[in-house]
Amino acid sequence: QVQLVESGGGLVQAGGSLRLSCAASEGTFSIYDMRWFRQAPGKEREFVARITRSGGFTNYADSVKGRFTISRDNAKNTVYLQMNSLKPEDTAVYYCNAVLAAPGITISNYWGQGTQVTVSS
Image (cartoon, rainbow, N blue to C red; front, side):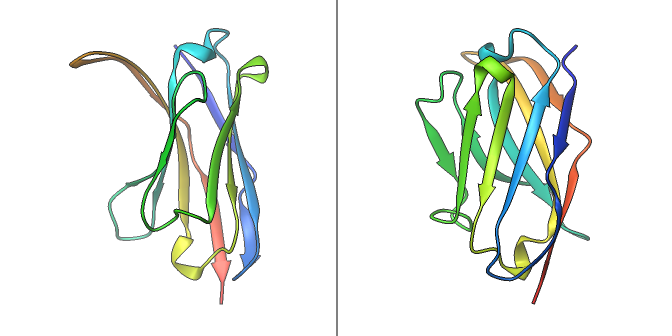
């Protein structure tokens, strides 16, 4: 069982920046593909960013491309989401997600409790 704990959320003005962190309890953190999702009030949870196990590949939702950067430090069992040029529409609860998968199947899938990000206009 992997426990994920997000931190770094808060209230920021439009145009500002925040850095989210997600710390994993699992010592084998490096085997997990890591993602960030978000959920705004009244909306479905949506994909934000993904980083592969070694950090060699990343991809982003179109809505955040060029503004957000995902990274990871496997030595610290932590994944980050640097968010710049924030917009009011980025307001949401941000969730960390760890996935262990093999071709065609998901072996393990863990979620954090979420951290609130609020961007004022």
